[in-house]
Every structure is written in structure tokens, then in C-alpha cells.
Length: 401
Image (tube, rainbow, N blue to C red; front, side, top):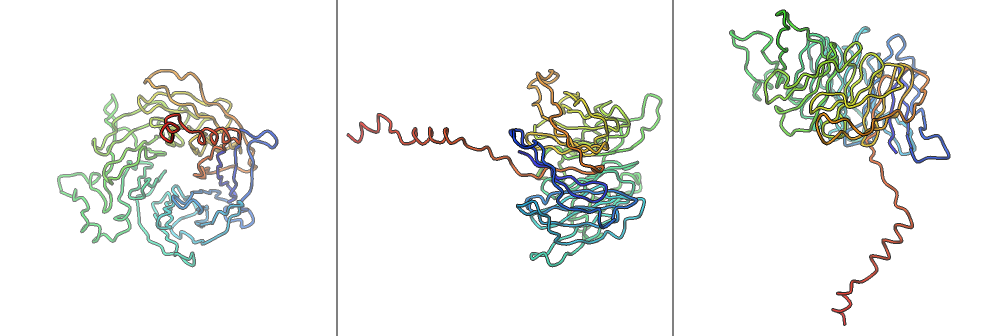
């Protein structure tokens, strides 16, 4: 019974709980957890991002168009209690948040804007205050992601190559970062574009020129981490481009992509990408009304979801279902079908749209609440198990005799 949390253009935060076994009440249940429309904070520049608190799933973060970032405590009765709120002063009217992540282990929230304003905010143990650390990244960013262990982050953008950074060194002073072993690539013979910033671990290199010898434009619209890694310098990344291609990177194998999957984004390029829970599964949407499941073993589209009428601007995967938030004001719950065992084989079944929920306003972000489903135990089955456990083996009776 997965639950998804949704942020919309007016600053509202809602939850959609899907119960496929429900027969009495509607399967998807929509609740408003936080009414942000009364503050008018997003008027003129609607944008809200939500993120769950990592290991500490009792906290929820939200970023708004006016630069405000809020941390809530999510109670068991679906109430949101505001813990702290602050404002990113470096954001301008024509800019927005493109990254928001939470690290539950140290109660830190990371936010990043399109102009490269990176902020790490850490709550005190008693939630009475918050401390901030600032960092500056390149501008014209389109997406920013934090790794699973929070040790690294990655970004990409318009004429900004995919880049991997060490989180701790990114917030250190330049002298401290250099002392900790920042790569020294700044020789005169090297191009300036090859020189890494203090704290930067790895940067991608553009693909080769086209058949006319012309440079390929760089426009990374979205990216995600593919698999957890304990090494900051060894990461697997997947990026989508405005040209509609997906580029897979292995930082150990060099700076150019190890695989380029062309033509995935059919309309307007790739809009967003999310890694699925299966090993080789990725969910991709474009600027049309397409949501696909991509097999990362060969870059083929395994299947697509039918019946969509708006661009899916945010995707959220759970172990059992996929949620998509679209500009047509619908949140859709999709079924997920395992990929075939053999590469290139067509799946026996395809995923479908199970339910759709009208959320009144345009959603801007959707996430899974990270709560694992608990399978209920049938009373009759439990009785049978108790009977079997109470019975003795024949060998045991002989030994007692």
C-alpha cells in the first residue's frame, strides 16, 4: 500500500495513498497535509519541491519559488508540523530550485538552484535552530542529485557537463579543499575546461563531433545515480539530454559516456529520469506525454504507458508501483512489470495506468514516502503454522521413549 507525497504550484503538500486491495473506499486516497496557498509565497513563480528525510523518514523538506525552504515533522496521523524555515537569499526572480535532498543521519537538508547556489542547512538536536553552509556551483544548471550515502553529489545543465563532487570538500574553504587533495589539473598545457574546481572529483567530456565535424551541443536536462557506491570517485550516472538521448557514465572508465541511448525522448528531449528498484530498470519521461521503462542493458524501451495526456514533470518509484505527476493536474499510479531475463526480449506483460487522481492544481514534484509495505498475515494461515510448530517429529518421540 504505497503512499506518495506531492508538492504543487501553490505550495501545497498532499499525500496519495494507494491500496489495491481496497473494495469499500476508493483505492487512491488524497489528503492535503499542508495548505501553502494562504501564504501566497509562490505567486508569479510557482515551484515546490519535496524530499523525504533519508534515514529519518519522519521529516519532510519543501522548497518554494520565493526561496523559502521548510522542514516539517510528519506525524503518524498525517499532520505536518513546521520545525524550521529559512530563505535562500541568492535566488532571483527568474530562477528556481532544481535540487533538494535530505540527509537523515546528520539532520541536514541540501538545496540547489539554477544559478548554482548550493546550501547545506543542519538542524540542532532539539530542532531549536539551524546552521548553514554555503557553496557556489556553475550557473545554468538543470538538475542536481545527492548520492545514496550523501558523500557525493552530481549536476548537469545547459552547456554544463555532468559533474561529480565530494560533498564535504564542496563546503570547505578553497585552502582546506586543496590541502585535502583537490586534483591539480591546472597546467598551462591543459584547456581551462579540463581544470576541476576545488571539491570536484570528476567531470564528463562531450561526445565526439558529428559527421560534419561540428561540435555537439551540451544540454543535460536531468540525471540520476544508478547504483550505490562506497567510493567517491567510482560512480555510475545516467543523464538525459535536450536532444532526447540518454547517456550512461562510469567515472572509472573515463570522461566520455560508456553508452549513449539515442532517441529515448521522443518529444522535446528527456524531461526527467528515475532509477527503478530492479537492477537494469529506469523510468524516463519526455516533454510530450510519454513515460517509458528503459532497459539499461541495451538502452531499449521495454514498454511505455498509454493513456497519458500531459507531460510527466516528476516521477517517483516504489518497490511495487510508479507515480507520475503531470501538468494536466493528474497524479497517476502505474503498475511495474519486471524486465525480461534475456537482453532484447519483449516482456510478456506491460505496465499500465492503474489509477489517476485529480489534484486540483498543477503538481511540481512527487516522491515515495519510503515506507515499506507490510504484508498482513491471514489468521487461518497463522493457525495452521501454529499447529505444525506444535507437532513433534517421529524421531523426537523415539528418542524420548
